[in-house]
Image (cartoon, rainbow, N blue to C red; front, top):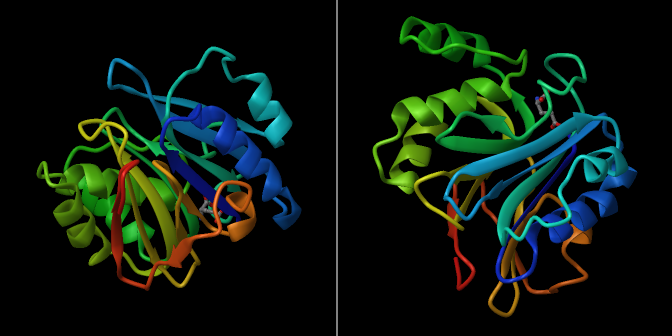
Length: 217
Ligand code: GLU
């Protein structure tokens, strides 16, 4: 179980995410990645096996996105590889996950029967695809229906392409905090990742879902 960071505000999200991930390095990990909203409204990804410095090396200096999620992975399902690194998802939804989804095989079989393809060996991809399957235009409703079907320990950072510059978060057992700054908001698995920006934070309760914009939660 490793690290999660998310940011929405006015700063360059990439800088906040990479700094946050670097501060979580002490926990140990095998890969790292970020997803962020582009001006076009699409979600872009950078992810790689290796260290945060390897991730930084494949990021663009001129990335001006102000909202994104980041992850350091400690592989539990599937080897450390670029494909298995988080964020994981498709054109519509992108997620970062800490923990283990115990019933992912069953979920995967169900989703394959509905026509979904899988490219990673992670348990996480079953959650990403289930979010896509359940998506009804209302992110909170979609997340509530999805977490009702997943078993295990998890904390999740989620972005939907249709909801630009918003981050959603949910957790059960694995920790996740929502940090509040001045016109900016954060999520993190550990306060170390955001302490440079704010000391005001809230520990999500198991089963709670957070809907986060730059102005509030
Ligand atoms: N179970 C997930 C995976 O293997 C997440 C691992 C983690 O917590 O870093 O990708």
